[in-house]
Every structure is written in C-alpha cells, then in structure tokens.
Image 1 (tube, one colour):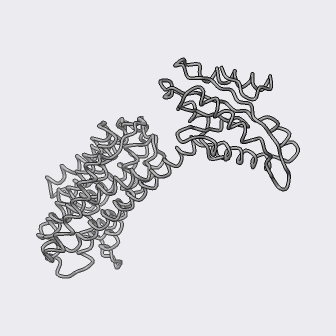
Image 2 (tube, one colour):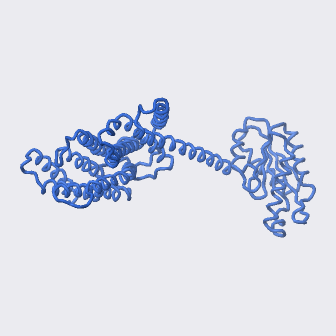
Image 3 (cartoon, helix red, strand yellow):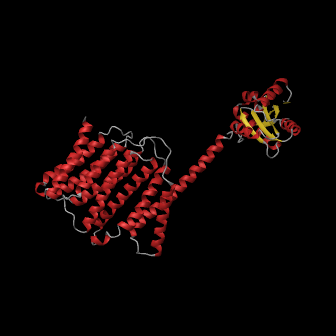
Amino acid sequence: MRTRLLLFLAPVLLVMHLLLNLVPSMKGMWSELYLYNAIALTAIAVVMNAPRVNDRFAQPLIAAAFGLWLSGSLISSISSYFLLSAPTQLLSNIAYLLFYPLAIVALPRLLSPSRKFSTLEIFDASIVGLGLTTLGTTFFLKPVLPHFNGDLVQTFFAIIYPIADLIVISLTLATTLAQGPSKRGLVLATGVLTFSITDFLYLGMHINNTYTFGSLIDDGWLLGLLIIALSFHCTGSDSLDDKSTNPILITLSVFLSATLLALIALRPGYFPNFVLIPAIATLLLAFIRMTIALKAAKNIGHERILARTDELTGLPNRRTLISEIESFMGKDGSLMLLDLDGFKPVNDSHGHAAGDKVLQQVALRFSRALPHGALLARLGGDEFGVLYEGSYESAMDLALALRATLSYPFTIENHHIQIGVSIGLAANNGAPDLLRRADDAMYRAKREGLGVCRL
C-alpha cells in the first residue's frame, strides 16, 4: 500500500510543479524550495521501498546518491531566497558532483543483482565507458572553455558534469547490452538519458546566459531521478547467464582513444587538451585488462596441467591415462598396469616421507626404461600405468625391462630398500574392456607371483 502511494504521489507532485511553471505568478519559495525538493525526497522513498531488487548495495547506494543531489538542490534553493555567508555555489556543486561516484557503482549492480562482476567485466565496462567519454569530450565539450574567462572552478565543474554524465550513460548502456534487454534496463537507461540531457541543456543555457532559477529545465533532473527510481520496481534480467561486454565495443573504444592521441600528437591544439585524460585512461585500463587476461589464461593453463598431473611424481595421473585410453582404441599397442610389491612395509618401517622418495625414484626408473611415445602415469598409491604403441611381443619385452629396473635396491637416508613390481599386460584388440583386462592380469601376476602376466 505504501509503495503504491509513493508511486502515485511522486509523478503527481512533479506534474504539479510542471503546471506551476506555466503560471509564474503562483511560483515562489513554497514551490521552488519545498515542493521541488520534496519530489527528490519522494524519489528516495520510492527507491528504498522497491520490492524487487535483490542486490543489497544498489538501493542504499542510489538512495545516498539521490540524497547528495538533494543536498545540492537544497543549498542552491535556499541560497536563492536567503542571503548566506557560506560559498553556497561551491558547496552545491560538490554535493551534485558526489552523486556520480555512487551512481557509477550502483547502476550496473541494479541491472545485474544476481551475479558478481568479474575483474575483467569491470575493466571492460570501464574501457567502453571511458572510450565513449573520450568521444563525447572531443566533440561536445570543446566549445565550453572560452566562455568562463579563465575561472578554473567554473571551468572544472562545466567539464566534469558532462564527462560524468557520459560515463554514467556509457556504463548503463554497456551493462544493459551485456545483460540483455529487460524492462528495468530500458527504464533505467531512459532515466539516465533524461537526467544527462538535462545537464547538457543546462550547460548550454549557462554558457549563453539564458538559464534562470526555477525554469522548466529544472524539472528535467527530477524527471530523470523519478524514472531511475521507477526502474527499481521493474523486472530485470536476474539470470546467471555468462554474458560479457561485446569485444567489438572494447576494440572500438581502444582504437578511438589511440587514434585521438595520435591526432593530438600530429596536430597540437586541434583537439582540447582535456581529451588526454579519458583517452590515456582508456589505453591504461586496456593494458591492465590485457595483463590480467594473460595472467588468468596462464593460471587456467596451469590449473589444467595440475588437474591432469600427479603432484608427487610429476607424471600424468589416472584421469589423463583414462582419457588417453579412449583415443588409443584404434591403435596397435598394449596397456600395462604396474603394482609395487613390498611397498607397504616401506611406509611402516621408514615413514611416509621415505615412501614418497621411493615412489619418485620408481617413476624416474620407469621413465628412463620407456621408449619415446609411451605414456607413463601414476594411478594412485603404488600403482602405475603404461600405454605403449607397438607389437604385442615388444610390449612383453618392455614389461620385463620395467620389472628389471627394480631389481636393485633404492638408497633412502642411508637405508637400502628393496621392492618389486607385478605387471599386468593387456593387448589392445579394440574392445572397450582394455583397462579391466589389464587390471585382471595385474592381480593375477601379483596373486600367483608371476612378475608379468599377459591377457
């Protein structure tokens, strides 16, 4: 009930204020100070009473952003009717400006509340935003500077507001494209565009000295805030789809910034110098993004290697062997399973550290005995496997050679340790039971003391 009342009250108040602009005689402090700022306060209440937002940061951040904008509006309104000794214009400008950092953080979260943005996604959105900002600062802000007669404060705020608007627009549109179309994204983009266009119109009027306090354009900011607040009550794209910023947008942003920097170097003074800031920032973010992506790719490759490698011996693991068996079916060769004899007493008598060293040396001896192209894997514990491509007779010779590598003892911490190995050998006949037959042969060799058993 309260939410419906707020959604009804906010546009009604705005319409009242718009109608009062048509009747200047009825305007006054009550409309421009109380009613105007009451609408902004209502927009905050609409945001905080939104029932459909899952992200815990979006609502408080936007509410705080609206609160800062309201503070700037109150300071500006009060100074229009009361004589204050404080630097009211500077304070209101600072409050207005602080609206943007919170909005930049919150608006993308509103569009994608059910998933966290990765570091690369944040960089991608920032690159697109700064790239489009570079374009905006190049072609839309150049006429601003000559109109402020060297006043650095006025020049700073005249430039920073449109740049901030362009960043908010770019991030909103980039996030909307990444998430896919939704009612919330459409409404939010409309609100952001309305708010930003009002800023640009105000800037043009301020430059031409045609702006007056309490004019119709002031309602444009309120309309933008109310539409943004309304987007909190719309359904969004809350799925966990793995979407990201279109790489074409990233490429164009980087290309645009690099091109503008080259043109500035070739023709100094043709473009305003403040274009350097977003252009350089875009290229810097692109470089950092590339570094992060390369590091992530390297880590993924390393993780994949670890997932297929035995940590103790450095040999391929069971997963790798089974994967290779699937592609081995059409080849002429054999599978050998090797199980160490007398290894358990090594762990019991000398400890697991000594047992690990024995396994490492066993792996080394087996590796040296195998021909190039044979795959040796540790399957776990004291069990190894070998995939060998060659004739059945040569596979038997290789099995005997592997067994012979353990005919002399290992020297571990001045202890001589003697172990043996039982080997099961199964020829590849194209049947899918290669692993089972090799396992049966190995257990038979171990049970009957055959050393090597072939099936």
